[in-house]
Amino acid sequence: MSANTRQVAGGHYVKYGEFQVWDAWWHWDMDPFQANIVKYVMRVKGDVSKRLEDLEKAEHYLQKHRELLIQNLNNIDEQYRKANAESWKLSVLQEAIVRGVAYNHLAEQIKQLGMVAELMKTYKEQLLEEQEQNDQAQT
Image 1 (cartoon, rainbow, N blue to C red):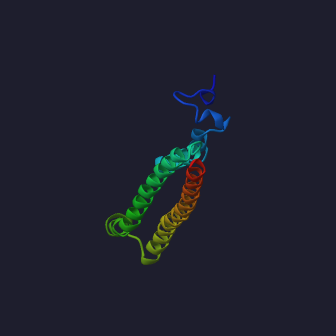
Image 2 (cartoon, rainbow, N blue to C red; image 1 turned 90 degrees about the horizontal axis):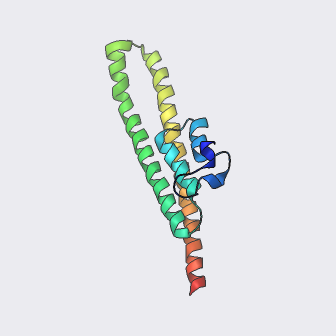
Image 3 (cartoon, rainbow, N blue to C red; image 1 turned 60 degrees about the horizontal axis):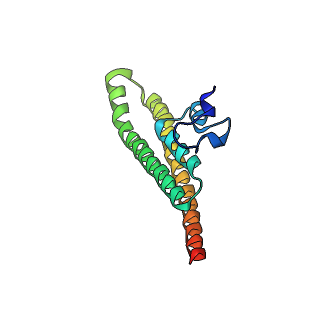
C-alpha cells in the first residue's frame, strides 16, 4: 500500500489523489518554508474560517521565509568581504561577478515572495468577502 493512499488523522490530503502535497515538496525541491506555505494553501478547503486560518498560517511561513532571505542578503556583504580578504583573494571583477550572481538570486527570491504575498492578500480578501456574504445570508 502506498503512503499516498492513506492519511493518519483526517482526510484533507488523500482527497488530492495521486500527486499529493509531499510529492510537490519532493519533486519541486522545496525548503521547509516553501513546503509549509504550499501545504497550508493546498489545505484551504471547506468552512471559510478554517480556510482563513490555514491561509494565515501560510502567510506566517511566507513572512519568516522572506525575513530570512532579507537577512541573508544583508549579511552577504560581510560574507564576501571575509571570503575575499581571508581566502578567495578575488579580484575586484571576480568579486563583482560573484556578488552579482548571489545578490540577483536572493533579490529575485525576495521579489517573488512579495508577489506571492500580494496573491495571498487578494485571496484572503476574497475569503473575507465570502464569509461576509455567508454571514449576511444567515441573518
